[in-house]
Length: 153
Image (cartoon, rainbow, N blue to C red; front, side):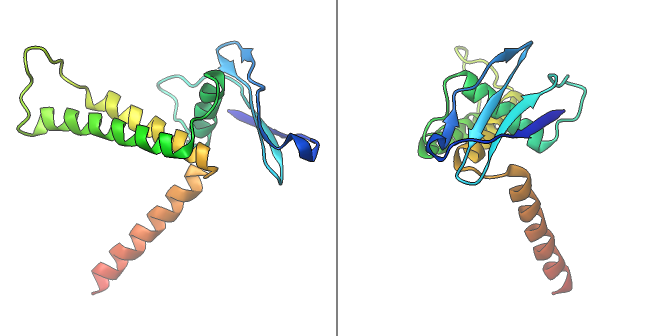
């Protein structure tokens, strides 16, 4: 579970705060914008059998990025996303396409590559200040509308 606390701050302190502190195996992170500020405090890490809500995942990604020194610029994160998509494409091509694995290569695991893509999408969303859950809900609504239009046509 994620606890979110609003804090007071001086206008001169707008930006990302270097407030990442180890708390067991999790981290605290803080974000400050012109409108409000948050401190994200994961209460515990999520086990692999627990569901992971999108907002919790986005906060967990934020904490790991701050622990590693902060975000790259959004364009660099986009380039990183394309790199990860290429690795996923290679894994899918090896498993379902004509790509043969050379003796010097290892079989790419699609689930690992897809995990890297999802992580990097959340990195990009965070670096752009986009709420991934809101964006996904809007995309699903748009797809449902298209499907309804196609069914009615």
